Length: 163
Ligand code: ZN
Figure 1 (spheres, rainbow, N blue to C red):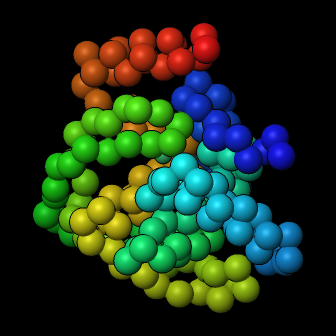
Figure 2: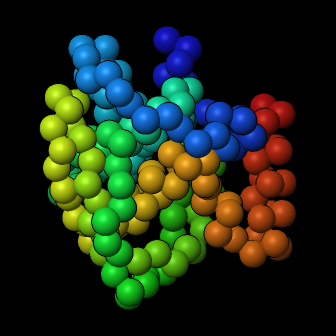
């Protein structure tokens, strides 16, 4: 299944703004199941659809070890308090960089049945939610780094592309 390969930094799909989901059907549910499988297989805390080659506004994140599916998610609230922690991304293998993010977030989203719900997250969960929401807008971890760190990450990724 080609589409389930993780897309790495450099793949143009990671820079596109993903499209809203308009059809809540069986193929959406089965795609979301695939996303959850991939997230667990790669030991990720979250995954966004573009990372497996589908430019749709769908993300999954782990909260209390359970996957939460976020379809067409919208950020409702973030805390003023920020927290710096090392952050990784399946599209940047083996790269972890310190990034400041709000400690707490609240989002609304739809589930696979098309029902709207709200979910909040703290700490690592908040970080995962914000990270995956960024993906849906084509924003990546590297965008938060200083020019020097950016250059370092790019050179590490270039080595990876050659493999
Ligand atoms: Zn990521």
